[in-house]
Image (tube, rainbow, N blue to C red; front, side, top):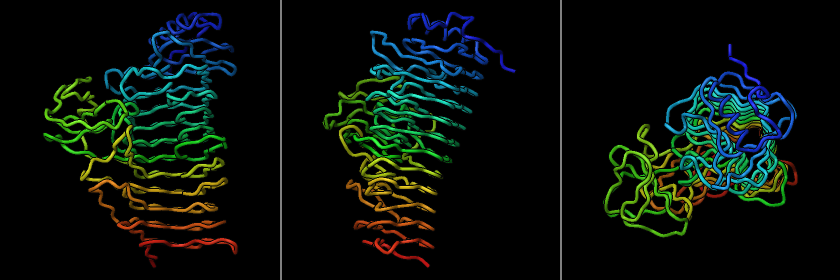
Length: 441
């Protein structure tokens, strides 16, 4: 049985300064067990607190955590302790948290790539439930989970500007009962990402995302969910490097963390440092990982179920390679990942969303079942970077309703094998096939 600690006995008070409350909260978290914020009120907290293994942080109804600036830049509000040493923490739960960002945004990072208010990095068996935030800023993710096993995020309501729930590499996860109103992606499955937006890269797999709402908002960018992959090469002399490029050198993975200005660099000396960041040939290389060293990553075996898309977005689900000044997620002629085993069940398009799926990465098996598509199309596109090999995409369209002008299309160089059963296209609608789309029996 967990030791139970009540915050009112440890000087955690709505009348305290943010720094006093940070110290009180950290003292309780260092003891561990079950910490209950047992009084209602608005509690100022400045800076970052660290939560360790076998710890539950629980809030009574009416208790709010309000971020206040430190004056020296602001990183995460909560991180797990093992994030700083890349050692796994186990059995952490945050329950009933109501976060007020209060114009505090992420202006510095405790760890390069952890760009969030609440973050788990190197964790197993974690839970975030009954969580609210209605004033997320422009730069920091609300919840970020990276390098994990067995994660559950449930009953969350997040509104604001940046990503609501942002995943890096990991396996076995559930995101359930989410209500989102965000300018950027409400859900990001970013196996690869900007150098400042993921501390590590790797496959995201075996996930269930269900009962989620994308609420309407006048302004928008991004997608309802981005499935972001990447691929890179072993370092070699003379290779051209851009911001966020990845290389493998001496059995470790390094990323270039440079200004997002499109500048290209010629790398003549390999990075060799074993931790942290170092400039080599004018390139700031960040050592991202020396375990699980891989050459590509993406998403596989992900099930989206009971999703309601009320917001106007260009694309709902993007199987994506970045290629801009912020990120260059596919290096020419690398071994491109195939994102596969993706299921969409009872996804309801309720607004103008021109593309239900748009893919610039290779994809394998994709099933779309009992979905309402309206005028949302499916397109297999080309990233336009040399060396990507696109195998045929195997697309199953089963029991879906089409209300409008929809198409399933493949650009030159891509092919779709389409398995279509029991779909309903009403009298005033159409479902057209464009490009190399083969109907399978």
